[in-house]
Amino acid sequence: MRLAFQANENLSDQDSEVRADKDRSTSLIRESVFLTIIMGAANLANVIFQILMGRWLTASDYGVLMAMIGILYILNVPADSFRTVMAYFAARETTGNGRSCEVAIGLYRQVMRRLLVVSGIILLVMTCSAPWLIGVFHLEGPGPLYAAMLVCVSTLAMTTFQGVLQGTERFGWYGVSMNCWFWGRLLFAALLVYAGFRATGALAGMTLGALAGVIIPRLLLHRELFAGRVATPSSGTMRPLYRYIAKVTLAYALFMILANMDVLAVKHWFPPEVAGEFSRGAMLAHLIWLMPFPVVMAMFPKLVAARNDQVVRRRLLVKGIAVGAGTSLLLAAVLLVFSPYIFHILFGSSSNEMIGHMPVFLSAMLPVSFLFVLLNYELALNKRAFLGPLMLGNLLLIGALCVRHGSIEQILETLLIGCWLLFAAQMLFFLIRYRMGGKRNAAG
Image 1: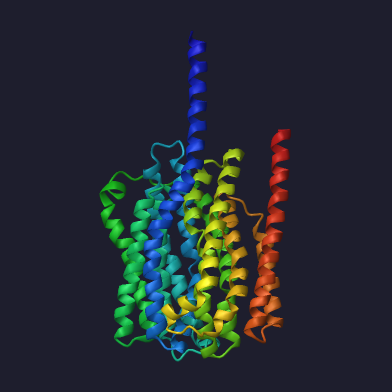
Image 2: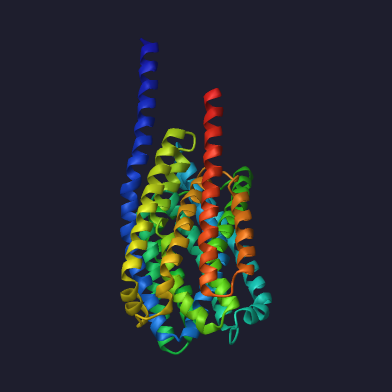
């Protein structure tokens, strides 16, 4: 009787684990749709922000703003890294650990202390590099650079907090943080630009928005998450965290360089007016690789929880790529069909020369969106083999742009060929590793 009871108990445990794995897979689409909706509300603020900045700033000032945003995408790699690290360890502790929140909040507080050091390093590097960067990007003064520093530091604090929300799958509160960030950015930037502070005012508004994105939800969630007992992480827990931070930082740095190479190249090799017009087209084209973000957010903690189950991992990956590709292709189709109207609404001009470049531009950004899904899949499983091909692809693409940058057409054609070749190489490399892993598991 006792053996039968234990056998039934084991079967019950196995059934519950199977049901939990199925729930993770089936809830992916539902949570992706939910995140798409709440992030859509935040992106509405982003659209209004771009409309106001595109119309209120001169083409030269708008080019400065977009160049600084391009730099911020690269400098904010530590911000995305800390968000991903916090999401990874919070999700890992949630799996089968009743003290998950205590451990996650303890890690969060330890990481926030270390962020003070990282922020100081960022401020020091940017201050020392300011004279050189002013010449490289043809800036009138250091104001936009110093404002960009503050954006970077404030975003570090916000995204680390958002990582706790993502890892514990509090996606509703994540949406609150995102909307406070984007709508706060819109409000403060509009006021400062209207007051005459130009691109520097827009960047300062981004800083204030990022602070709103962490302070407001942090206060609202104080009793639920932060007021209870906290487990102090041991040194054994922190060492894997440091290794994972290094891996994630390198991965996001390589991806952000790839995704923003176009704006930085045009800003460097072309006059400010041309770079400003290009930045307006880039703002739309770059939305393509941002479209999979909601499904990646929902997929990441589920992959961490199912890291030892190849079947669930495969199901999550297929659904993630399908949803991400579907949203990216849908947006690309909308932008292709309605480009003149969108340019007229956003920038007050339906005859912008970038309209003719949009088919090639959007086609070049599609493989970048697919790479974004693959990159986060690998990070959720704590892999690093994909970093080598990504680094080599970046170096080859930079070399190609150094040779072919005589016109906007050449830059976009080089991006189109390079990004698709990089995606094909990454997929081939991924499939080979996946097949070899399956054979090892079968042999074991």
